[in-house]
Structures are given as structure tokens and as C-alpha cells.
Image (tube, rainbow, N blue to C red):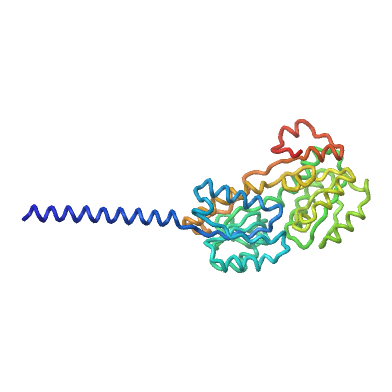
Length: 331
């Protein structure tokens, strides 16, 4: 009789163990096959590499698109479309989190997202701009990778001076309605004063005003064009590139994408690498870590890119020691 009860207890224990094992396996299988929805709000255009990097970074971390994550993308075509309305469409799709690109798009998402987690990228000065409480903790539903575009504006002038040491006057077009342009010019002005460069500042709000400024800047009146980052100027960068080539002026910008369009040199963020960096934060959120517990990160390192074809076109000889430091060369 005792032996029978002992066998029954052993059998019950075995069945319970099997049931628990099956439950854990099924739970693990359900989690691994649960496809998470990621909403992406992006200006498009030259910011597209951020999304490319995000996809690459998530795949490297085991979150392959179509298997563990799916993307709902709203591209505002360099703000031809309203980012707030685009953000509302994303929220209506009920994503697990939002990824935003650029300050304006982070602002749009924050306005309508409610409690949905937001991982931002390319956001200028998130603390001073009021998006988060501090870099250590946002104290809200935001985390992400900030932008170094504005602080590096002074360094870009230094880079340009290495290539063309004779620069004394630089044209700086400022899109005054964009905060990134205002902040960038402040850093640029400090560096210009240090290097003895006179900035010829021209303020714009429209494409037509930009065209007028280009026409009203005669050849020989400036020695270089120094890009002051702004979406307005990115949308019409070819106007400045053509002016620089026509007047044989070195033109310094902040991203490789603009160098590929004909600018001479860039020193700044690599948008694809920022996307990869943001992917790590996205995974933390997907695993249940509140954004307020994920410190804000800065871009890991700037990259230096030169357009050798443009250099030949405008008659600038790139020093060998400079070429040795270049990350990428555009032909």
C-alpha cells in the first residue's frame, strides 16, 4: 500500500514537472514569435540612413524584421507633410514604441504619443529644449540618442581652415525659424572669433530668400561657405553646392550625405551609425525597461568625409596629413 502511494506521488511529481516544462517552452515560444510593432517618424531625404542603421542594428541583436519586429514608417518628405499628423497616424496603428528622427519629429511625437515609449535620434540638446529632465533620467517616456550637430559647428570651421587656411570671410546662411540653426550659429561664431574669420551672416525663412542671398553674394566677396544646419537648407542644398562650385569656394557641411551631393567636406554624425546605436535602446524598451531608466546617449563619434572630385573642381589641394585622418573619401 505504501509502495503504491509512493509510486503515485512520484508519478504526480513527474507529470507536474512535465507540465511546467511544457508551459515554459510554450511561453518562450510565444515570446519569441511575438512580433513587436515599431513606429518610425522620419523626415526622409538625407535622414534615411538612420532607419537603415536601425534595421541593421536590430537584426544584429536578433530582432529581424518580419520575424520579431515590424516597422510602420511615416516619412514626411523633408517636412512636406505635417509631422504631427504623421505622428497621429502612427499612434493610431498602436505601436509598441516610436522611434523619431530629428528634433521637430520628436516634438511632434511627444505631443500626441501619450504614454507610448519614444526613442528619439538626432535631437538637439534634449535637456535645454525641455524634452527630458536630464541625460541620466528623462523622468518620462522618452530616451534616445541626442545630436552633436550644433556643438560640432565650431569644429567644422576648424576642419575647413585646415584645408583652406586662407579663409578670412565665410558666408553663413541661418534659417532663423529653426532652433538647430540658431544654436549651431552660436558655436560657429565662437570658433570664427577664435580663428579670426569674419562671418557674413544672412538670415532666411524661404527658398526664395535663399536664392536672393546667393545672387546678392558676388564672387570674391567671401572665401568659403559654412553650412549652418537646418532642414530648409538641406532641402535646397544644391543651390549652395552650385554656388560653391561656380565661385570655387570650399563648402563645409555636417553630414556625409551632403558631401555626396557635392559639398567639399563634412565633419559630424554618421546617421547610419546613430540608427545602429538607437537599436540597442529600442531593444531595452522592448524587453520592458522603462525609458526613464535608460540614460540619454550622445553619438559615439563624428566622422570626417571629403569629396575629392569637388576639391579638384574648385582647385583645392587636400594636404596628405589631412587625408590620413579622413574616414571616407567620395569620388
